Length: 206
Image (spheres, helix red, strand yellow):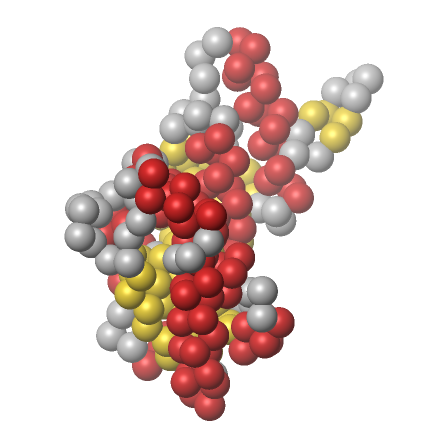
């Protein structure tokens, strides 16, 4: 994953910590997606960071106010000043609504990153398929495997991150996790310098 995308995720999560200071935001916001150039790693100096905030139609105006209030608090905070020193103080472009009513739905569902969510956007189950590159050094290889998949040895057994996230291992380097766990998994992989690629998949109901 490109550093620019990782920075954008951290930057947006920092913003959301201010948005959710108001308990009403947690009640009215259904999901928040990062999409557009930030996800593709194509931000330039004057680019906005695109966020789609999903909310019930009756709550749209109020949710817009809550997000704007969070942005106002964030941009005068010490956190924001730190981002400015890093030259990553992009403006936000916020769209609020019901995802299924927007032309952006396919784009967001195919490349968007869910930063917050109470559930999936449709009746089918959205998951994210990750493909990783395991380290070649033995000690690093073992560390990563234990982190993700846990340990199943005679003298020690323990769950890994994948099981904790209700994910599923498909092979030694491929696994899927629920869409709402995507951001957390990306953060863990990036923190541990594990190269990865990902793609959203949909498990159709029978």
